[in-house]
Every structure is written in structure tokens, then in C-alpha cells.
Length: 540
Image (cartoon, rainbow, N blue to C red; front, side, top):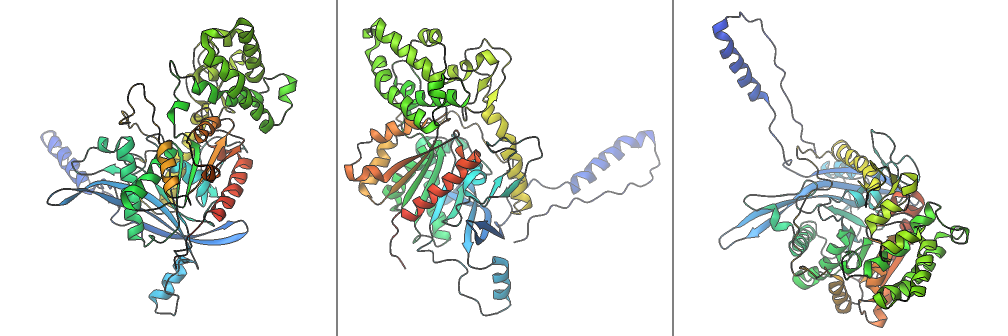
């Protein structure tokens, strides 16, 4: 489809006879004329933009159709339904032949196949989103799943100086599934409409409901009810994904085949540091150790071990003697405390006196500031391999997250050029990469309670035992540490024969382990195996 183009007329200046009394009138006329030629603000084009492309994945040529557009959500009322939101999406659908050639032949009346798409009953479709809450889908879109990805300056994901660009993604999942990247309301180009307040979408339940309504409308409009269905989320997007998998089944009768949780958080007890909750200190500990390992802060007996082996040893200590020490509290003897402090220091590189002053409980912010304090550096929350420099070295926590600061512009600039220059979608709206949606309504999770959608996932896995869950975790993630998801998995009370339907895969890197080139390649291989293994029905 042609892209929307705005044409601005150029004004030709003519020779004027100046008179003092006429000057104000002339200026007013000038301004009035200019206003007539000013382009109108365009929030959305009249139609979706569809373009056709080719990519190479695993040595195979993939033809695909890319569509950038919106789906309108409706607010049902007694007499009429009114639009409540427009949700932006980018979809990629595989085609059998180059789409532009197929359409040209079809329009010319040549003999072509009835459809240029693979059999929809055997072709999976994956709905993908990120988290925040308040994040657009750009990270998974241009980081791992899509046919294009942002370009990096090194193999760990650092972007270098601007300008930034996208490049072919040989690790895209488009060979295994079609993809629809969804921007929840208030993120990306998605906005509330009419008299509906965006606040109506800013909550755990309303967010899940709106995304479910989007999915239902999308599969209806695009004849995908009979396709194998996957849900993929990252960070808070995994919270949404777990709740959504249950909601789709319970409210719409839509069953999911597989769920992909990248850097998962579905039980917030594992994440929220607070008085009386010792679980996060246990769950973060192995990631502290992995951070110290990366920055060479350990004694040789630990530093020389492979990261996977060392991580497991730190995990065993965290779940064993460290957890026991925290549970004992004031009953811990001095000898026991001394032993735990010594071993914590050996695993994390932190000074024993710092650990003791923290009562054995070092939260994430303090760790990021303390671990490299003597070098004048902080480490990142999203990826603790990245370092930054604060104004001074005496603070309790870091000034900013260097792992987010270094990549935000890369993704923002790359997406804005890609969506317009390659996908031909034009909008004057600001594409909200990460926006403020606070306060976020967590509903029943009030003060003293923690959000827990793990039970919803357990429930739907028991009701639909075919569902498979893929979990990806980065060793250096100090936002949602791997042990947090493992702890949750182990406490979901899944039936014995369903426990292995949910598996965690570990990678070098952080919250977005796909920034790391080697980890992206491994993630692709693991996801390929996952998609191939998920049971798919026999619909024809």
C-alpha cells in the first residue's frame, strides 16, 4: 500500500510596498496564509501499511509480508459501542512466494494459487510484547524475534556513537512462526480514544483484558483461529503473558500452545526487597556472584571456574546456608555469622564489613553501587556487565542504570527510521519506547501483598496440560534474576507430570541476554527446538 505523504506548499515572496500603517495587516495576512498551507497533525494513516520483504534464516530464504497498523478496541455500551483505544502492532506473516509478485500476477488475472500463505492450521502465530509496565514491544521486536534487529558495535550489545540503524537478523524466529508485536495502550503508537481515559488501561487486570481483546480481534480479522498460538513476553511482559494465557482460556475459550517468558517475573515476592521479606536476597545472590565473576572480583578458586559451574555453586549456597542464616535471624550464632559473611564475600567480591553492616542483606541498588566502588564505577541493573560513573563514590545506590542508558537511543532511533523508511508507516505521534503509566493498579495486591500470577499459569497448565513454557534467563540480570523464576517454578505446586512442561534456559548476559551475540545464537537454537517440540493439533 502507498505510504501517507504530507505535502507542504512553498510560498513565493513578492515585492511589497511598505507603509507603516499597513505593516500589522501585512503580517497578519502572512500568518494567515501560512496557516492554510501548514500540514495537519496525523496520528494514524487511514489504512495499515503492508510491504513485502525477504530474509535469510538458517540458510533458508524466507518471503514475508509486514503490516504496520492499528486495531480499534470498543467500549460496549447499552445503545452503541464506542472506540476506547487504538492499539498499534507490527505483524510479520510468511508467504510462499514474493508477495508483490504474487499480487501483481493475481491483479493481472494470471493463474496463481488461491492463497500465498502457508497452511494456517500448521503455521504458528506468536503474539509478543515487552513489559515495564509502560514499555513498547520494540525490544523483542528489534532485539530477537523480528527479521531485522538493531546493529551493535561489539558482541556484548554496546551501540557505539549514533546514527543507529537496523540490520538483517539471521536469528529471527520467522522461520518457525508468524509474529505480531503488540504495543499496549499508552505505549508505542497505541492511545486511548474518545472520552476513554488512558488510566482505564493502566492496571494488571485491565491491561491483560485489553491485550486479550486485541488478540481475539486480530485472529478473527486475519482468519487465524485455527493456527497454533504462542504468547511471548519479556520482564513485566511475562507477568502479562502468564495472566493472559489464563484469561484467553477462561474468558474467550482461546487455548495457547506455548508460552515464552524472557527474564520472567510472575511472583513478585522474589523481586520486592522489603522489611520481613528475605526471599529476594536469596534469589539475587547467584546473580551478584555472576557479576563479580564477570568483573574479576573473586579469589582464583572461584574466578577460574566456568560461569555456569560457578553460578550453580553460588545458587547452592544461597538456597542452603545463606537462606538458613536469614531464617534464623537473631538465633544465628556469632560463629555461624562469621562463616556466612566470609563465604558471601568470597562469592560476591563484597567486603566482609559491608556485608556485616547490611545485616547479611544487600539489596540490588546497594550492590550495583558497592561492587566496583573502589574503581569509581557502578554496574547496570538490566545487565551488570555494563558499567557507569556517578557524580561521586559515597552514595548508597547508583545515579542511573548504565545498561539502559547505553541502549535506549539505539532502539529508539533504529525503530523510528525502520517503521517509516522500510515499513512505510507514517505518524506524527511520538513512539513511546518506555512511558510513564504510574500509578499502575495492581488490584488485589495491596500493601503487604505481592503480585502473583504464577497461580494463574499453574491453573491453566493443569486445565490444558499440552501447554509448554519456555523460560530464558540471563546470569547477569539484576532486574529479574534467574533464581527468582526457578524459585517460583519450584513453588507453583505443578503436578509431577507437568513440572517439566516448564523449563528454564540460562545465558551469558542480562535482562536482554539477546544483546550478547553468542547468547542470541544460543537462544535462537533453543527456541527452534522449543517450537518444534510443542504439540500442535490436527486441524486441516
